[in-house]
Length: 267
Image (cartoon, rainbow, N blue to C red; front, top):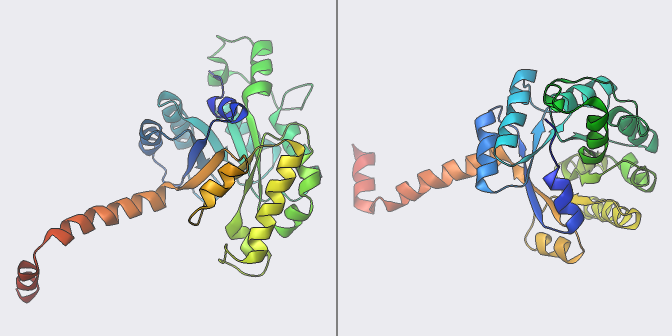
């Protein structure tokens, strides 16, 4: 059953929150994130071929570990947003939002009347009827987060219109895709990309919409906190797991004394 959105509440009270993208299709890993202390997870459906049952189980795993589950859907289509929310996600993250019209469409698809026109269903979101539908509609409109990603130059140019749409709960930058849009693919620290991110953050501040930053360089975290940003996406589980595995192996290799290392190579 849909619970109080702890991520949304924490952002509103100014608490600093950290999240990861879940790209490894394993609910167990999502559960580990919660017990590791992360505040939210973005379960990826945009770049990962994950079946719906695994997505739903990942949401369950997040719920059990006290982690707020958001789903990054592949696009802003009504039916895509509907299925993500009906499986129990506490929010959706929509990539490549470029206009006010698209932001309004997301709100219409993600909210119930009078804020939107989301299709009505019961199931696990209502505790299989434990929560009556009118009460669920009210709770869903209050607790579910609609997050837009700005990943294109068109989105940056329209950010004031996007951020002013009532019902958008947070804006997330996508520096890697922005770099391609600005003609410098892969160079997320390029001044044009960084300026675009600053433009997004400034607009969010002006319109009172939370901005989620992605620290990628030294001191960026402190800089964002000083500017009042308190939501941070700090990578994806693939990168974290790979670095941890590589570092774990290196710890053992580094303990091998030079003579023994040479003897093994000769053998």
